[in-house]
Length: 194
Image (tube, rainbow, N blue to C red; front, side):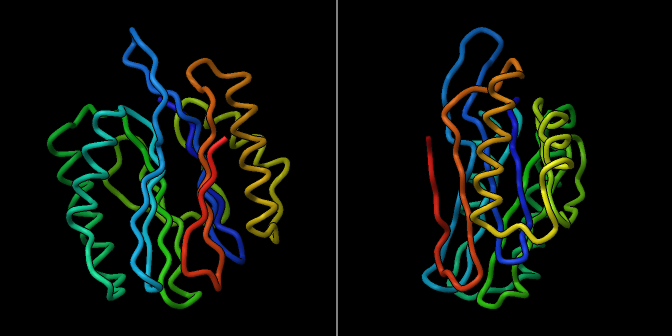
């Protein structure tokens, strides 16, 4: 498990995670944010909390399913629902949750979505969401520090601060921190690892 944090800002989306992976015996550092982009059309990113073997397999399968330069939100959402339902059916006891950042060619095509642990439902995120073992601390800090009109740059700084607090106070969260952001008017997602 880990911590994954997402912000739905008026001007874009921010996703942030730690990089801890453990199987109960050993610890590894992995990137928990996956991203698919087309040239100047649309993009999808997934920040996951849960079993890393499943996360790697799920994002690889999504990557094989999600292809094409043309933005079709209904098709993308149907593909995600199918992949999530198949995963939940195949692994009913799976402890996995995820945040999905989706952007398209217009500002109205921007979405931050979540799948909670054990759920098959993709729900919209209005302002912020945190998942994984650090989610309680992250949600508390968001409730105290996030403001309704926070822009992408401010939310990115806050996300790094909050994930760092999770790393400092929650066993199972560790450096480095991965961050992905997309801002309206940009046709590419920006990434940062620290």
